Length: 268
Length: 323
Image 1 (tube, rainbow over the protein chains, first blue to last red):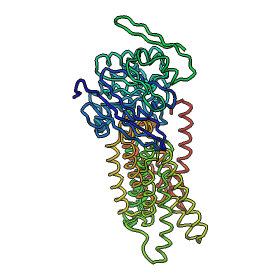
Image 2 (cartoon, each protein chain N blue to C red):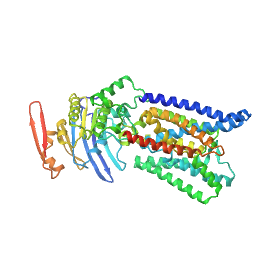
Image 3 (cartoon, rainbow over the protein chains, first blue to last red):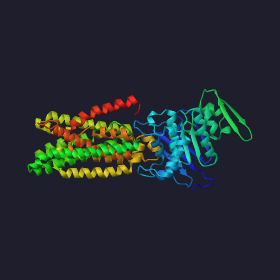
Image 4 (tube, rainbow over the protein chains, first blue to last red):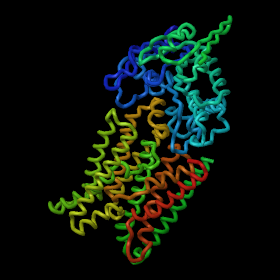
Protein backbone atom coordinates (compact mmCIF):
# COMPACT_ATOMS: atom_id res chain seq x y z
CA UNK A 1 0.00 0.00 0.00
CA UNK A 2 2.87 2.32 0.72
CA UNK A 3 3.92 4.16 -2.37
CA UNK A 4 7.68 3.99 -2.61
CA UNK A 5 9.37 7.35 -2.54
CA UNK A 6 6.47 8.80 -0.62
CA UNK A 7 6.92 9.72 3.01
CA UNK A 8 5.01 7.32 5.26
CA UNK A 9 4.02 10.31 7.35
CA UNK A 10 4.17 13.99 6.55
CA UNK A 11 3.40 16.94 8.80
CA UNK A 12 2.37 20.32 7.49
CA UNK A 13 2.64 23.41 9.66
CA UNK A 14 1.74 21.57 12.85
CA UNK A 15 0.98 24.11 15.53
CA UNK A 16 -0.23 23.56 19.06
CA UNK A 17 -0.85 26.42 21.43
CA UNK A 18 -2.05 27.03 24.96
CA UNK A 19 -3.80 30.37 25.40
CA UNK A 20 -2.06 31.93 22.38
CA UNK A 21 1.39 30.73 23.45
CA UNK A 22 2.70 28.34 20.81
CA UNK A 23 4.16 25.15 22.29
CA UNK A 24 4.78 23.69 18.86
CA UNK A 25 5.10 26.16 16.05
CA UNK A 26 4.58 25.40 12.35
CA UNK A 27 6.52 22.15 12.24
CA UNK A 28 6.68 20.61 8.78
CA UNK A 29 8.63 17.45 8.17
CA UNK A 30 8.62 14.12 6.37
CA UNK A 31 9.20 10.64 7.71
CA UNK A 32 10.22 7.86 5.31
CA UNK A 33 10.43 4.14 5.94
CA UNK A 34 14.08 3.51 6.80
CA UNK A 35 14.43 6.73 8.76
CA UNK A 36 15.53 6.78 12.37
CA UNK A 37 15.02 10.31 13.54
CA UNK A 38 16.37 11.54 16.85
CA UNK A 39 14.28 14.43 18.14
CA UNK A 40 16.51 16.68 20.20
CA UNK A 41 15.54 19.66 22.31
CA UNK A 42 15.57 21.02 25.82
CA UNK A 43 12.85 20.49 28.42
CA UNK A 44 9.78 22.41 27.42
CA UNK A 45 10.86 22.74 23.81
CA UNK A 46 7.68 20.95 22.73
CA UNK A 47 9.06 17.47 21.97
CA UNK A 48 6.33 15.46 23.64
CA UNK A 49 3.56 17.70 22.32
CA UNK A 50 4.94 17.39 18.79
CA UNK A 51 5.16 13.60 19.08
CA UNK A 52 1.61 13.37 20.37
CA UNK A 53 0.37 15.53 17.54
CA UNK A 54 2.25 13.48 14.97
CA UNK A 55 0.72 10.26 16.32
CA UNK A 56 -2.78 11.67 16.50
CA UNK A 57 -3.24 11.44 20.28
CA UNK A 58 -5.66 13.63 22.12
CA UNK A 59 -3.90 16.65 23.53
CA UNK A 60 -3.94 18.31 26.91
CA UNK A 61 -7.33 19.78 27.51
CA UNK A 62 -6.48 23.46 27.08
CA UNK A 63 -4.50 23.08 23.88
CA UNK A 64 -5.69 24.12 20.46
CA UNK A 65 -3.99 22.80 17.38
CA UNK A 66 -3.79 23.34 13.65
CA UNK A 67 -1.93 21.81 10.73
CA UNK A 68 -2.08 18.44 9.05
CA UNK A 69 -0.61 14.98 9.49
CA UNK A 70 -0.79 13.03 6.22
CA UNK A 71 -0.19 9.39 5.46
CA UNK A 72 1.57 7.97 2.40
CA UNK A 73 -1.59 7.98 0.32
CA UNK A 74 -2.22 11.64 1.13
CA UNK A 75 -5.05 10.95 3.56
CA UNK A 76 -5.22 12.87 6.80
CA UNK A 77 -4.28 10.62 9.72
CA UNK A 78 -7.29 11.55 11.82
CA UNK A 79 -9.70 10.25 9.18
CA UNK A 80 -8.35 6.69 9.38
CA UNK A 81 -10.12 3.98 11.35
CA UNK A 82 -8.74 3.02 14.73
CA UNK A 83 -6.66 0.02 13.69
CA UNK A 84 -5.44 1.62 10.45
CA UNK A 85 -4.27 4.64 12.39
CA UNK A 86 -2.56 2.47 14.96
CA UNK A 87 -0.79 0.47 12.26
CA UNK A 88 0.43 3.63 10.61
CA UNK A 89 1.85 5.31 13.67
CA UNK A 90 1.99 4.25 17.30
CA UNK A 91 3.00 6.50 20.17
CA UNK A 92 4.97 4.70 22.85
CA UNK A 93 5.44 6.54 26.12
CA UNK A 94 7.83 5.88 28.97
CA UNK A 95 5.59 4.62 31.76
CA UNK A 96 2.75 2.22 32.28
CA UNK A 97 0.90 2.62 35.55
CA UNK A 98 -2.27 1.05 36.82
CA UNK A 99 -3.91 0.31 40.16
CA UNK A 100 -5.51 -2.79 38.68
CA UNK A 101 -4.16 -6.31 38.42
CA UNK A 102 -3.32 -6.44 34.76
CA UNK A 103 -0.87 -9.13 33.72
CA UNK A 104 2.02 -8.60 31.34
CA UNK A 105 0.37 -10.90 28.81
CA UNK A 106 -2.85 -8.90 28.93
CA UNK A 107 -1.00 -5.61 28.55
CA UNK A 108 0.96 -6.90 25.55
CA UNK A 109 -2.13 -8.38 23.92
CA UNK A 110 -3.87 -5.02 24.11
CA UNK A 111 -2.05 -4.21 20.91
CA UNK A 112 -4.47 -6.32 18.89
CA UNK A 113 -7.49 -5.06 20.72
CA UNK A 114 -10.39 -4.56 18.39
CA UNK A 115 -9.46 -7.49 16.18
CA UNK A 116 -11.60 -9.79 18.24
CA UNK A 117 -14.13 -8.69 20.77
CA UNK A 118 -14.17 -11.84 22.80
CA UNK A 119 -11.66 -13.36 25.16
CA UNK A 120 -10.37 -15.85 22.66
CA UNK A 121 -7.22 -14.99 20.81
CA UNK A 122 -6.65 -16.50 17.39
CA UNK A 123 -3.62 -18.73 16.90
CA UNK A 124 -1.98 -16.27 14.57
CA UNK A 125 -2.25 -13.43 17.08
CA UNK A 126 -1.23 -15.72 19.91
CA UNK A 127 1.93 -16.48 17.92
CA UNK A 128 2.58 -12.79 17.40
CA UNK A 129 2.19 -12.13 21.13
CA UNK A 130 4.52 -15.02 22.01
CA UNK A 131 7.06 -13.67 19.54
CA UNK A 132 6.88 -10.19 21.09
CA UNK A 133 7.23 -11.60 24.61
CA UNK A 134 10.25 -13.54 23.44
CA UNK A 135 11.90 -10.63 21.61
CA UNK A 136 11.64 -8.35 24.62
CA UNK A 137 12.61 -11.03 27.15
CA UNK A 138 9.24 -11.07 28.87
CA UNK A 139 8.27 -14.73 28.46
CA UNK A 140 9.04 -15.53 32.09
CA UNK A 141 7.25 -12.44 33.30
CA UNK A 142 4.05 -12.87 31.28
CA UNK A 143 1.82 -13.84 34.21
CA UNK A 144 3.17 -11.19 36.57
CA UNK A 145 1.05 -8.15 37.35
CA UNK A 146 2.27 -4.88 35.88
CA UNK A 147 2.38 -3.27 39.31
CA UNK A 148 5.03 -5.75 40.46
CA UNK A 149 7.45 -4.82 37.66
CA UNK A 150 10.20 -2.22 37.68
CA UNK A 151 10.00 0.82 35.41
CA UNK A 152 12.50 -0.67 32.99
CA UNK A 153 10.50 -3.90 32.77
CA UNK A 154 7.31 -1.97 32.10
CA UNK A 155 9.07 -0.13 29.28
CA UNK A 156 9.81 -3.52 27.75
CA UNK A 157 6.09 -4.32 28.02
CA UNK A 158 5.33 -1.14 26.07
CA UNK A 159 7.80 -2.15 23.36
CA UNK A 160 6.36 -5.67 23.16
CA UNK A 161 2.85 -4.27 22.83
CA UNK A 162 3.98 -2.08 19.97
CA UNK A 163 5.69 -5.06 18.33
CA UNK A 164 2.32 -6.84 18.29
CA UNK A 165 0.62 -3.77 16.78
CA UNK A 166 3.40 -3.62 14.19
CA UNK A 167 3.05 0.04 13.16
CA UNK A 168 5.01 1.59 10.30
CA UNK A 169 6.18 4.50 12.40
CA UNK A 170 7.33 3.91 15.97
CA UNK A 171 7.19 7.07 18.06
CA UNK A 172 9.34 6.38 21.11
CA UNK A 173 9.09 9.07 23.78
CA UNK A 174 11.84 8.22 26.31
CA UNK A 175 10.79 4.59 26.09
CA UNK A 176 14.37 3.41 26.75
CA UNK A 177 15.00 5.74 29.68
CA UNK A 178 14.87 3.24 32.57
CA UNK A 179 16.07 0.11 30.83
CA UNK A 180 19.30 -1.70 31.61
CA UNK A 181 22.18 -1.01 29.22
CA UNK A 182 22.18 -4.46 27.61
CA UNK A 183 18.47 -4.10 26.81
CA UNK A 184 18.89 -0.59 25.42
CA UNK A 185 21.56 -1.88 23.07
CA UNK A 186 19.79 -5.11 22.15
CA UNK A 187 16.37 -3.60 21.44
CA UNK A 188 17.94 -0.61 19.72
CA UNK A 189 19.76 -2.98 17.37
CA UNK A 190 16.66 -5.06 16.69
CA UNK A 191 14.70 -1.94 15.73
CA UNK A 192 17.66 -0.54 13.77
CA UNK A 193 17.77 -3.71 11.63
CA UNK A 194 14.11 -3.33 10.77
CA UNK A 195 14.70 0.33 9.97
CA UNK A 196 17.61 -0.66 7.71
CA UNK A 197 15.35 -3.10 5.88
CA UNK A 198 12.95 -0.17 5.39
CA UNK A 199 10.16 -2.00 7.18
CA UNK A 200 9.61 0.72 9.73
CA UNK A 201 10.60 4.23 10.71
CA UNK A 202 11.49 5.36 14.23
CA UNK A 203 11.19 8.80 15.73
CA UNK A 204 12.59 8.94 19.20
CA UNK A 205 13.36 11.20 22.07
CA UNK A 206 16.12 10.21 24.43
CA UNK A 207 17.85 12.34 26.99
CA UNK A 208 20.85 10.09 26.69
CA UNK A 209 22.46 11.94 23.77
CA UNK A 210 24.95 9.21 23.01
CA UNK A 211 22.30 6.51 22.97
CA UNK A 212 20.27 8.78 20.72
CA UNK A 213 23.15 9.29 18.31
CA UNK A 214 24.13 5.62 18.32
CA UNK A 215 20.92 4.59 16.58
CA UNK A 216 19.60 7.70 14.88
CA UNK A 217 20.86 8.66 11.45
CA UNK A 218 18.77 11.81 11.13
CA UNK A 219 18.05 14.44 13.73
CA UNK A 220 15.36 17.04 14.17
CA UNK A 221 16.27 19.86 16.53
CA UNK A 222 13.41 21.53 18.31
CA UNK A 223 13.94 24.85 20.03
CA UNK A 224 11.09 26.80 21.61
CA UNK A 225 8.58 24.91 19.53
CA UNK A 226 10.33 25.50 16.21
CA UNK A 227 12.25 23.04 14.10
CA UNK A 228 15.56 24.93 13.88
CA UNK A 229 17.55 22.21 12.13
CA UNK A 230 16.85 18.87 10.46
CA UNK A 231 18.96 16.44 8.48
CA UNK A 232 21.90 14.02 8.70
CA UNK A 233 23.17 13.96 12.27
CA UNK A 234 26.82 14.60 11.38
CA UNK A 235 26.12 17.78 9.46
CA UNK A 236 23.16 19.02 11.48
CA UNK A 237 24.31 18.57 15.05
CA UNK A 238 27.08 21.09 15.36
CA UNK A 239 28.44 22.44 18.60
CA UNK A 240 26.73 25.71 17.75
CA UNK A 241 23.38 23.99 17.74
CA UNK A 242 24.09 22.47 21.15
CA UNK A 243 25.04 25.91 22.46
CA UNK A 244 21.76 27.26 21.27
CA UNK A 245 19.50 24.61 22.72
CA UNK A 246 21.48 23.87 25.91
CA UNK A 247 22.96 27.31 26.71
CA UNK A 248 25.90 27.19 29.08
CA UNK A 249 26.60 23.49 28.62
CA UNK A 250 30.10 22.63 27.44
CA UNK A 251 29.69 20.00 24.72
CA UNK A 252 32.28 18.53 22.39
CA UNK A 253 31.10 16.65 19.36
CA UNK A 254 33.29 13.88 17.98
CA UNK A 255 32.87 12.09 14.70
CA UNK A 256 34.64 9.04 13.33
CA UNK A 257 34.00 7.89 9.83
CA UNK A 258 35.11 4.70 8.18
CA UNK A 259 33.89 3.42 4.83
CA UNK A 260 31.07 1.38 6.22
CA UNK A 261 30.39 3.03 9.50
CA UNK A 262 29.90 6.41 11.03
CA UNK A 263 30.11 6.94 14.75
CA UNK A 264 29.22 10.17 16.43
CA UNK A 265 29.32 10.96 20.09
CA UNK A 266 29.31 13.90 22.40
CA UNK A 267 31.39 14.56 25.49
CA UNK A 268 30.29 16.82 28.28
CA UNK B 1 -4.62 -20.31 36.84
CA UNK B 2 -6.82 -17.49 35.67
CA UNK B 3 -9.10 -19.83 33.77
CA UNK B 4 -9.48 -22.15 36.74
CA UNK B 5 -10.49 -19.02 38.65
CA UNK B 6 -13.23 -18.36 36.13
CA UNK B 7 -14.53 -21.91 36.46
CA UNK B 8 -14.37 -21.85 40.22
CA UNK B 9 -16.22 -18.56 40.52
CA UNK B 10 -18.94 -19.65 38.14
CA UNK B 11 -19.44 -22.93 40.02
CA UNK B 12 -19.64 -21.23 43.41
CA UNK B 13 -22.13 -18.73 42.01
CA UNK B 14 -24.35 -21.53 40.74
CA UNK B 15 -24.10 -23.39 44.06
CA UNK B 16 -25.01 -20.25 45.98
CA UNK B 17 -27.91 -19.58 43.65
CA UNK B 18 -29.25 -23.07 44.43
CA UNK B 19 -28.82 -22.47 48.16
CA UNK B 20 -30.58 -19.16 47.82
CA UNK B 21 -33.45 -20.73 45.97
CA UNK B 22 -33.77 -23.26 48.76
CA UNK B 23 -33.63 -20.45 51.31
CA UNK B 24 -36.35 -18.49 49.59
CA UNK B 25 -38.39 -21.60 49.13
CA UNK B 26 -38.22 -22.57 52.78
CA UNK B 27 -39.02 -18.97 53.70
CA UNK B 28 -42.10 -19.18 51.59
CA UNK B 29 -43.05 -22.71 52.55
CA UNK B 30 -45.18 -21.70 55.50
CA UNK B 31 -47.20 -19.26 53.44
CA UNK B 32 -47.44 -21.77 50.64
CA UNK B 33 -48.69 -24.51 52.93
CA UNK B 34 -51.29 -22.18 54.37
CA UNK B 35 -52.61 -21.59 50.89
CA UNK B 36 -51.30 -18.02 50.83
CA UNK B 37 -49.77 -18.27 47.39
CA UNK B 38 -50.43 -14.54 47.10
CA UNK B 39 -47.61 -13.77 49.56
CA UNK B 40 -45.19 -15.89 47.58
CA UNK B 41 -46.03 -14.61 44.12
CA UNK B 42 -47.09 -11.11 45.05
CA UNK B 43 -44.39 -10.20 47.57
CA UNK B 44 -41.46 -12.57 47.80
CA UNK B 45 -41.02 -13.43 44.17
CA UNK B 46 -40.90 -9.79 42.94
CA UNK B 47 -38.53 -8.99 45.76
CA UNK B 48 -36.16 -11.78 44.72
CA UNK B 49 -36.34 -10.71 41.07
CA UNK B 50 -35.60 -7.16 42.14
CA UNK B 51 -32.60 -8.25 44.20
CA UNK B 52 -31.22 -10.16 41.22
CA UNK B 53 -31.72 -7.30 38.74
CA UNK B 54 -30.54 -4.50 41.04
CA UNK B 55 -27.58 -6.50 42.36
CA UNK B 56 -26.27 -7.32 38.91
CA UNK B 57 -26.91 -3.75 37.74
CA UNK B 58 -25.04 -2.12 40.63
CA UNK B 59 -22.12 -4.50 40.27
CA UNK B 60 -21.88 -3.93 36.51
CA UNK B 61 -22.06 -0.17 37.07
CA UNK B 62 -19.13 -0.50 39.48
CA UNK B 63 -17.11 -2.39 36.85
CA UNK B 64 -17.76 0.33 34.27
CA UNK B 65 -17.02 3.26 36.58
CA UNK B 66 -13.80 1.77 37.95
CA UNK B 67 -12.44 1.32 34.43
CA UNK B 68 -13.80 4.64 33.19
CA UNK B 69 -11.91 6.59 35.84
CA UNK B 70 -9.08 4.01 36.16
CA UNK B 71 -9.75 4.27 39.86
CA UNK B 72 -10.48 1.20 42.00
CA UNK B 73 -12.54 3.18 44.50
CA UNK B 74 -15.29 4.20 42.12
CA UNK B 75 -18.76 2.81 42.52
CA UNK B 76 -22.28 4.01 41.68
CA UNK B 77 -22.16 6.56 44.51
CA UNK B 78 -19.11 8.22 43.04
CA UNK B 79 -20.98 9.64 40.09
CA UNK B 80 -23.45 11.47 42.27
CA UNK B 81 -26.23 10.00 40.14
CA UNK B 82 -27.58 7.92 43.01
CA UNK B 83 -27.80 10.94 45.28
CA UNK B 84 -29.53 12.82 42.47
CA UNK B 85 -32.07 10.02 42.37
CA UNK B 86 -32.55 10.15 46.14
CA UNK B 87 -33.10 13.92 46.08
CA UNK B 88 -35.61 13.48 43.27
CA UNK B 89 -37.44 10.78 45.21
CA UNK B 90 -37.96 12.75 48.44
CA UNK B 91 -38.78 16.07 46.78
CA UNK B 92 -41.22 14.54 44.33
CA UNK B 93 -42.88 12.43 47.00
CA UNK B 94 -43.88 15.43 49.08
CA UNK B 95 -45.00 17.21 45.92
CA UNK B 96 -47.06 14.20 44.84
CA UNK B 97 -48.77 14.02 48.23
CA UNK B 98 -49.82 17.67 47.94
CA UNK B 99 -51.00 17.32 44.36
CA UNK B 100 -52.65 14.00 45.10
CA UNK B 101 -50.91 12.13 42.30
CA UNK B 102 -49.00 8.86 42.32
CA UNK B 103 -45.28 9.11 42.82
CA UNK B 104 -44.62 5.62 41.50
CA UNK B 105 -44.70 4.47 37.91
CA UNK B 106 -44.20 0.80 37.05
CA UNK B 107 -42.50 0.26 40.40
CA UNK B 108 -39.99 3.03 39.70
CA UNK B 109 -40.06 6.25 41.63
CA UNK B 110 -40.81 9.01 39.12
CA UNK B 111 -38.85 11.52 41.19
CA UNK B 112 -35.92 9.12 41.28
CA UNK B 113 -35.86 8.79 37.51
CA UNK B 114 -36.13 12.56 37.03
CA UNK B 115 -33.44 13.27 39.64
CA UNK B 116 -31.01 10.79 38.18
CA UNK B 117 -31.65 11.99 34.63
CA UNK B 118 -31.01 15.60 35.63
CA UNK B 119 -27.78 14.73 37.43
CA UNK B 120 -26.68 12.52 34.54
CA UNK B 121 -27.28 15.30 32.02
CA UNK B 122 -25.19 17.70 34.09
CA UNK B 123 -22.39 15.12 34.23
CA UNK B 124 -22.64 14.32 30.52
CA UNK B 125 -22.38 18.01 29.62
CA UNK B 126 -19.40 18.30 31.91
CA UNK B 127 -17.80 15.15 30.49
CA UNK B 128 -18.23 16.25 26.88
CA UNK B 129 -16.31 19.48 27.42
CA UNK B 130 -12.93 19.38 25.75
CA UNK B 131 -11.24 20.59 28.91
CA UNK B 132 -12.41 17.72 31.13
CA UNK B 133 -9.93 14.98 32.00
CA UNK B 134 -10.31 11.82 34.06
CA UNK B 135 -9.56 13.47 37.41
CA UNK B 136 -11.68 16.58 36.98
CA UNK B 137 -14.50 14.40 35.70
CA UNK B 138 -14.36 12.19 38.78
CA UNK B 139 -14.24 15.26 41.01
CA UNK B 140 -17.29 16.63 39.22
CA UNK B 141 -19.19 13.45 40.12
CA UNK B 142 -18.07 13.56 43.74
CA UNK B 143 -19.10 17.21 44.05
CA UNK B 144 -22.51 16.49 42.52
CA UNK B 145 -22.95 13.70 45.06
CA UNK B 146 -22.11 16.06 47.91
CA UNK B 147 -24.55 18.60 46.57
CA UNK B 148 -27.24 15.90 46.50
CA UNK B 149 -26.61 14.79 50.07
CA UNK B 150 -26.62 18.36 51.39
CA UNK B 151 -29.96 19.01 49.69
CA UNK B 152 -31.21 15.82 51.34
CA UNK B 153 -29.93 16.95 54.76
CA UNK B 154 -31.62 20.33 54.41
CA UNK B 155 -34.86 18.66 53.44
CA UNK B 156 -34.65 16.20 56.35
CA UNK B 157 -33.97 19.01 58.82
CA UNK B 158 -37.08 20.85 57.66
CA UNK B 159 -39.54 17.99 57.36
CA UNK B 160 -41.60 15.98 59.84
CA UNK B 161 -40.51 12.58 61.28
CA UNK B 162 -42.58 10.68 58.71
CA UNK B 163 -40.74 12.39 55.90
CA UNK B 164 -37.42 11.60 57.55
CA UNK B 165 -38.43 7.97 57.84
CA UNK B 166 -39.34 7.82 54.15
CA UNK B 167 -36.13 9.55 53.12
CA UNK B 168 -34.10 7.17 55.27
CA UNK B 169 -35.65 4.13 53.66
CA UNK B 170 -34.49 5.45 50.26
CA UNK B 171 -31.03 6.22 51.55
CA UNK B 172 -30.57 2.75 53.02
CA UNK B 173 -32.18 0.79 50.24
CA UNK B 174 -35.34 -1.33 50.24
CA UNK B 175 -35.95 -4.07 47.70
CA UNK B 176 -39.61 -4.34 48.67
CA UNK B 177 -40.29 -1.06 46.83
CA UNK B 178 -39.93 -2.65 43.41
CA UNK B 179 -42.53 -4.59 41.47
CA UNK B 180 -42.33 -7.42 38.95
CA UNK B 181 -42.53 -4.78 36.22
CA UNK B 182 -39.68 -2.71 37.64
CA UNK B 183 -37.55 -5.82 38.09
CA UNK B 184 -38.22 -6.78 34.47
CA UNK B 185 -37.31 -3.34 33.16
CA UNK B 186 -34.18 -3.22 35.33
CA UNK B 187 -33.28 -6.70 34.14
CA UNK B 188 -33.66 -5.68 30.49
CA UNK B 189 -31.54 -2.57 31.02
CA UNK B 190 -28.85 -4.66 32.75
CA UNK B 191 -28.90 -7.16 29.90
CA UNK B 192 -28.56 -4.44 27.28
CA UNK B 193 -25.68 -2.71 29.06
CA UNK B 194 -24.05 -6.06 29.73
CA UNK B 195 -24.10 -6.93 26.03
CA UNK B 196 -22.46 -3.61 25.10
CA UNK B 197 -19.84 -4.02 27.82
CA UNK B 198 -18.89 -7.52 26.70
CA UNK B 199 -18.44 -6.20 23.17
CA UNK B 200 -16.40 -3.26 24.46
CA UNK B 201 -14.46 -5.17 27.08
CA UNK B 202 -11.11 -4.49 25.47
CA UNK B 203 -11.72 -0.76 25.42
CA UNK B 204 -12.41 -0.93 29.16
CA UNK B 205 -9.17 -2.89 29.59
CA UNK B 206 -7.24 -0.11 27.87
CA UNK B 207 -8.92 2.55 30.00
CA UNK B 208 -7.52 0.85 33.12
CA UNK B 209 -4.13 2.21 32.03
CA UNK B 210 -5.40 5.79 31.97
CA UNK B 211 -6.63 8.06 29.22
CA UNK B 212 -3.26 8.82 27.65
CA UNK B 213 -2.42 5.13 27.24
CA UNK B 214 -5.88 4.37 25.89
CA UNK B 215 -5.44 7.23 23.48
CA UNK B 216 -2.09 5.85 22.38
CA UNK B 217 -3.95 2.66 21.46
CA UNK B 218 -5.94 4.91 19.11
CA UNK B 219 -9.10 4.72 21.21
CA UNK B 220 -11.39 7.74 20.88
CA UNK B 221 -11.23 8.39 24.59
CA UNK B 222 -13.74 11.21 24.85
CA UNK B 223 -16.37 9.47 22.75
CA UNK B 224 -16.04 6.23 24.70
CA UNK B 225 -16.13 8.12 27.97
CA UNK B 226 -19.52 9.63 27.14
CA UNK B 227 -20.84 6.21 26.10
CA UNK B 228 -19.67 4.45 29.27
CA UNK B 229 -20.88 7.28 31.46
CA UNK B 230 -24.29 7.08 29.83
CA UNK B 231 -24.45 3.29 30.33
CA UNK B 232 -23.38 3.50 33.97
CA UNK B 233 -25.82 6.31 34.70
CA UNK B 234 -28.62 4.34 33.05
CA UNK B 235 -27.90 1.37 35.31
CA UNK B 236 -27.65 3.48 38.44
CA UNK B 237 -30.83 5.39 37.76
CA UNK B 238 -33.02 2.30 37.22
CA UNK B 239 -31.48 0.56 40.23
CA UNK B 240 -31.74 3.51 42.61
CA UNK B 241 -35.20 4.61 41.58
CA UNK B 242 -36.58 1.12 42.18
CA UNK B 243 -34.63 0.08 45.28
CA UNK B 244 -33.00 3.16 46.81
CA UNK B 245 -29.32 3.62 47.49
CA UNK B 246 -27.57 0.32 48.19
CA UNK B 247 -23.83 0.71 48.72
CA UNK B 248 -20.81 -1.58 48.49
CA UNK B 249 -22.20 -4.06 45.95
CA UNK B 250 -20.59 -2.03 43.14
CA UNK B 251 -17.30 -1.94 45.01
CA UNK B 252 -17.12 -5.31 46.68
CA UNK B 253 -18.23 -7.61 43.87
CA UNK B 254 -15.95 -6.33 41.05
CA UNK B 255 -12.93 -6.34 43.37
CA UNK B 256 -13.67 -9.82 44.64
CA UNK B 257 -13.95 -11.10 41.09
CA UNK B 258 -10.73 -9.35 40.03
CA UNK B 259 -8.85 -10.93 42.94
CA UNK B 260 -9.55 -14.34 41.42
CA UNK B 261 -9.50 -13.78 37.65
CA UNK B 262 -7.44 -10.61 37.07
CA UNK B 263 -8.61 -7.34 35.61
CA UNK B 264 -9.52 -8.36 32.06
CA UNK B 265 -13.06 -7.19 31.39
CA UNK B 266 -14.08 -10.06 29.16
CA UNK B 267 -14.04 -12.15 32.35
CA UNK B 268 -14.76 -9.51 34.99
CA UNK B 269 -17.90 -8.10 33.37
CA UNK B 270 -19.57 -11.51 33.13
CA UNK B 271 -18.62 -12.80 36.57
CA UNK B 272 -19.31 -9.50 38.34
CA UNK B 273 -22.81 -9.34 36.87
CA UNK B 274 -23.51 -12.89 38.02
CA UNK B 275 -22.05 -12.35 41.48
CA UNK B 276 -23.79 -9.03 41.95
CA UNK B 277 -27.12 -10.84 41.65
CA UNK B 278 -26.07 -13.58 44.07
CA UNK B 279 -24.62 -11.19 46.67
CA UNK B 280 -27.57 -8.83 46.81
CA UNK B 281 -30.06 -11.71 47.01
CA UNK B 282 -28.04 -13.16 49.89
CA UNK B 283 -27.86 -9.79 51.63
CA UNK B 284 -31.59 -9.38 51.24
CA UNK B 285 -32.24 -12.84 52.69
CA UNK B 286 -30.06 -11.92 55.67
CA UNK B 287 -31.84 -8.59 56.10
CA UNK B 288 -35.20 -10.41 56.26
CA UNK B 289 -34.19 -13.31 58.47
CA UNK B 290 -31.47 -12.12 60.84
CA UNK B 291 -33.97 -10.87 63.43
CA UNK B 292 -37.35 -12.46 63.87
CA UNK B 293 -39.07 -9.30 64.94
CA UNK B 294 -37.97 -6.73 62.42
CA UNK B 295 -36.30 -6.37 59.05
CA UNK B 296 -32.97 -4.63 58.55
CA UNK B 297 -32.40 -2.15 55.71
CA UNK B 298 -30.59 -4.11 53.01
CA UNK B 299 -28.13 -1.25 52.41
CA UNK B 300 -27.04 -1.52 56.04
CA UNK B 301 -26.37 -5.24 55.60
CA UNK B 302 -24.26 -4.74 52.48
CA UNK B 303 -22.27 -1.99 54.18
CA UNK B 304 -21.78 -3.94 57.43
CA UNK B 305 -20.49 -6.97 55.56
CA UNK B 306 -18.79 -5.08 52.73
CA UNK B 307 -16.63 -2.65 54.66
CA UNK B 308 -14.70 -5.22 56.75
CA UNK B 309 -14.33 -7.64 53.83
CA UNK B 310 -12.91 -4.89 51.65
CA UNK B 311 -10.56 -3.86 54.44
CA UNK B 312 -9.27 -7.43 54.81
CA UNK B 313 -8.65 -7.71 51.06
CA UNK B 314 -6.75 -4.45 51.08
CA UNK B 315 -4.54 -5.56 53.96
CA UNK B 316 -3.87 -8.99 52.44
CA UNK B 317 -2.96 -7.55 49.07
CA UNK B 318 -0.42 -5.24 50.64
CA UNK B 319 1.14 -8.07 52.63
CA UNK B 320 1.71 -10.09 49.47
CA UNK B 321 2.92 -7.03 47.65
CA UNK B 322 0.42 -7.47 44.84
CA UNK B 323 -1.97 -4.82 43.87
